[in-house]
Image (cartoon, rainbow, N blue to C red; front, side, top):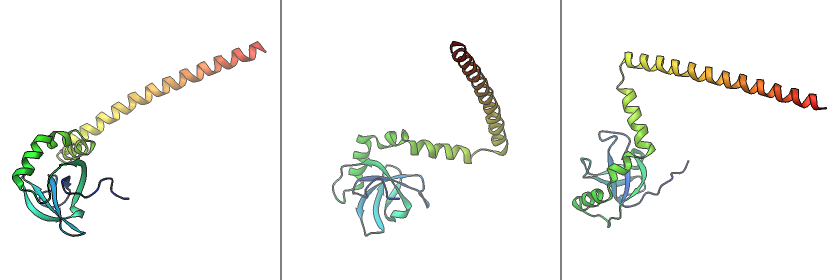
Length: 149
């Protein structure tokens, strides 16, 4: 499946593997067809070349000149409030959920299991009641139609 976003200078990306996994960075330069020069001055990632396979591109893009300094990137990053905007995306919310789930203890997982069980029973009862009412109304409607003929 092709990517939704282009690899461009200024594109904000999420590192999805390695020591800095889960941190946001900005693409500063494209080294070759496999690697990009990234800078994460705002998130504590030093400027380095990293393979595209380790990056997940986001919809955000900073308007930065070619090969700009870390200081300028940090300034533009704060002006555009990238951290805040990224925190509101579906991807960020999903990553937070995964983090919460991975930090759960065995007892927490058990409590979640039981809570889901109770919730599903309530939903099933409501659904059965609505289904029963609709069948009853359907029969009543069919009986009236037969009586008129």
